[in-house]
Each structure stands twice: as C-alpha cells, then as structure tokens.
Amino acid sequence: MKVKAVLFVLLIAGVLFTPGVSGSEGKPLVVTTIGPLAGIISDAFGNSVDVVYLIPPGADPHEYQLTPSQIELLRKADVIVTTGGHLPVEKRIAELREEGTITGEALFIEDYKANGFRYLKEHWYSGKDNPHGVWLDPTNALAIARAAERALEKADPGNAEVYAEEYERFEGRVKAIADSYRALVGQNHTAVIQMPPDQYAIEWLGIKAVASIKPEEEVPAIGVDDLVPTAKTADLIVYGIDSPDQMKRAALELASKSGKPAAEITVFWSDRPYTEVLIENSAAVVKALSGNAPVEKPEGRSDVTQYVLISLVVGIVLGTALGVVLKK
Image (cartoon, rainbow, N blue to C red; front, side):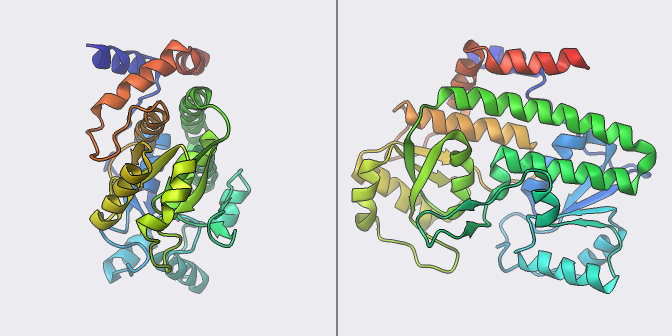
C-alpha cells in the first residue's frame, strides 16, 4: 500500500510524468546515438517530437558502426543528439555533418558546455576528464535537454514556445528530484565504483568515487583483493545492473569482502523516461548509505520506492514539484 500511495503522490506532483512518443508526421525527428539520450529527449519534449536512437540495446557503443539505413535516417533528422562526440558513431556523424551529408542540427560537447554541462575528473586514473556515463548526472541531462530545446526552436521556429514550455517543466521535475536526494545524503561520503560511468550517478550527490574496479575502457580490471583495503575505507560499492556478469560478480565480491553495502544502478537503458531512472538510481544509493543494501546478492528494485517516500517526508520533492505544477 505504501508503494502505491507514494507513486500516486508523485504522479500528482508531476515528478513521474512519463510522456509518450508519437509516430505522426509533421513533428521534428530527433535522432540520438544511445537509448538514455532518447530517454532524456522524450521525457523533456514528450509528444511534441519523434525520437529514435541508433545503437541497439546490448551493443557495445565503443565498437558500434553506423549502417547505411541509419545514415539515411540521419539525413532526415532535424536534430541529432550525441553523448558529446567521443563514440565512433558520433565521430562519423561529425564527418557526415562536415561533408554536408547531414543537414540537421547536430549537438556535441561544446553545445552542452554552453548550457552548464560538466565533465568529472577520473580521480582514480590520471585525473583526466571522464567521458563515460555523462547523462547520469542531472546537471548534464538538463544541459543536453536545453541544447536540444534550442536546436528544436531553430529547426521548427513556429513551435518554439511549445519546446520552451516542455523544457521548463522537465527542468522542474529533474531539479525537484535532485534537490530531494541531495538533502538525504550527508557529506564526505566515498565509494568504489565498478566502471567509470558510475561516477556520474553519485558525485552530483556529494559522494566521491575514489577507485574503480575497471579504471578505464582500455585498461584491465583491478583484482578484487587489491581493492579491498580501499573499499574498507569507503562507504559503499556502486555497480551497474546492466554491466557484464563478470564485472557484477567482482563488485559484489568486493562488497562482501570489505563489508560494505552495494548500490545497484542502471547506466544504459531504452524506452524509459530519464526521471524514472534518476529516481531509481538515487534511491538505490540512499538505500546503500543507510546500510540496508545487500553485500552478497543483489535484490529487486521495487523496495527502493520507500526512499522516495522519505524524500516526500522531508517535503522537498512534493513542495518543489507542486510549485512547478501550480506555476503552469
């Protein structure tokens, strides 16, 4: 009953608003490189745009190459949304844009930086910018959506007001969620992450990633026993539910040997709204910090909703989200 009550309240507040994606003609076509970006765009702009993504679920985005039919699709796109430009598919898109094959508005890292996007530094590996999983940080998600809004206004000026209003509502939902979960997390927490993308799911909450089982895409994983001393000084272990089984086993073994709770998050997804995944991931992290997360066997995700209830109790999500709704 509590779970249903919480979901009902969140739906009323507008926090779990889930727009559909229509296939009707006359709407701008937005093509994203990966599923999570499609989740941001469809969540932000709803039925005002058509959204498709290029890299299929389960494919390695660092290896995937465009097909001829996808190049034809890109030729029809009004707006193209990338993760920033580091993936092979995105580098090819930049080439096609330069050649004039693609004429739509193509968004890359500079477009996002102009709207507040930030790279995090890989503290555990040479301190370089981390290009992986950037969409998991709500600040970056908003920067991507804002850049897309401006591109849509340029591509379809007749509906500029619609895109601006849709973005404003999305921003209100994302900020309401982010503010609520920041309020639940104390200061000076640290975590050992499974892979670099996980950093973006926790550092906006104030939890520093001090080590990574797999430091970088091209670097071999570190042995679990070698990481145990570091993990014992951290507050939790973070791993992706959608990561390879071997990596998941390593993260859970590290949690077990260090005695630290494990937070299971989603890094890649398809056909789900961004705010839903943001709530789910944030709740999983809060649950782990409370000491109620498993260290040996991952559980289902249904019980994380109780941590959304805590957010409502502190009054931040409900107050902020209702404020956004009442302004409209």
